[in-house]
Amino acid sequence: MSEKTIKIGLCGFGIVGQGVYSHLTGKQAFLREQLGATLEVARIAVRDLQKPRDVAVSSSLLTTDPMSIAEDSEIDILCELMGGTGLALDVTLAALRSGKVVVTANKALLCDHGAEVFTAAAEGGGHVLFEASVAGGIPVIKAINEGLIINDFTSIYGILNGTCNYILTRMTNEGLSYEEILKEAKELGYAEADESLDVDGIDATHKAVILAYLAHGRWVPFKDVLVQGITAVKQDDIAFAQENEYAIKLIAVIDRIHSNEKLYVSVFPTLVSKGYSLGNVDGVFNAISIHGDVVGQTVYVGPGAGRDATASAVIADIVDAAKHLIYGGSERRFPFLDPAPSNGETIELAEPSDIHSRYYVRLLVMDQPGVMAEIASVLASREVSLASISQKEVGGNATKASLFITTHKTSEQAIFDAMNDLEALASVEEKPFCMPIGAFKE
Ligand code: NAP
Ligand code: HSE
Image (cartoon, rainbow, N blue to C red):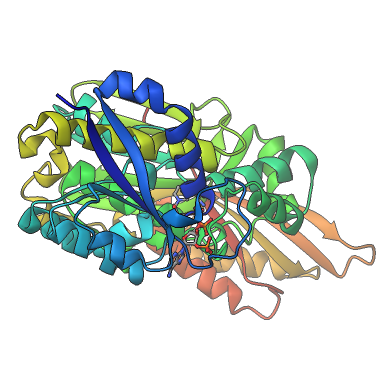
């Protein structure tokens, strides 16, 4: 009997696409031994045929028409590695409707169109695999879908964006400017084509929405997630964190609160104790702490972005898909076609008034009599209780000062209201910066 060949179409041959190609072809013999079949990259779609590439491929494989790969009956597995939510969605839906397996790293697409994509897969007989869409090389989707299948997920905390963690770590360790580090993160292939997706917290939110769906069966609309990126974090905040044994991390929280009645999803820069498992996860690494009612806490750490880490996750999905195509098996081999809690869509989303935390606040104020009293009065009027306050002169002429405040536990709504009131004061010189002080379940 002749050996089966599984044909793969790569839509996208950028950072991730080239990584997938080079590892798939470099380890083809090993994969053949594992699968008893050959994995062949048969077609590749790019935008620009003339662009110089790090990885050489025969020009006969290339096309500028990704849809032609989706419609090619010879292709078994389509890898959507272009990004975006326009053409990427059309290509994904077309491939799924024709019964192909789609492997995607595109978290924006799943966050915005996950329900539509999974419906197309179910109706068209296709499958969608997306391990690389969350936390790069960490197999966290497999962990939730398979290894932790018996658990209800009470809390998930994650460092989900490699670029932001890389920037925050180097700002902390080397005192470098944000712009300098972002440029390097782009050169290293960590950042999105549009880096504002990273630094504004949008990419981490896409991933948090996917994790919330996997854990709770509900697609939380992006607009209902409270999101703040890292662009307002300054060296002053980093100094405060270090002096107080914290690290600043962009943390996604997916929490069931009020005896599991409500679901809370947010992404904020957060003061994380260095003693907590996520507090020492640095550089491009991601980490996810998952609390299951049966297992307790499990923590996953690994490279969260970049060519090789992402290729590792994409290839794991390709191999799973190949096994399915070679050996067959029930639809339930792919658990996401049978989302965990079937009542997910009825879970109520938490409001800011449901959430309570301690907060850190930095203010730039006029350094003159009465300002401190005015600020204390605003906080008191919103029932925000001060835990500590310190002041640092700004510049040499003592006309301005930075104030660093920590609060006792207060509601998210109260702190948001207080921030708006403070911003409106004539003595407050710039938009106040505020972040939660993490209190994580261990
Ligand atoms: P990238 O380097 O910008 O590569 C995108 C590729 O898609 C390029 O080869 C580009 O062609 C091709 N492309 C874009 N629009 C196209 C179109 N209209 N027609 C044909 N080809 C088109 O991006 P990437 O970093 O590899 O990311 C790809 C996906 O993986 C994104 O969804 C991203 O969010 C996700 N992801 C990335 C990482 C990471 O660390 N980079 C990690 C996890 C997930 P040209 O090369 O000709 O421009
Ligand atoms: N830009 C993303 C990050 C890539 O930095 O985490 C991995 O999803």
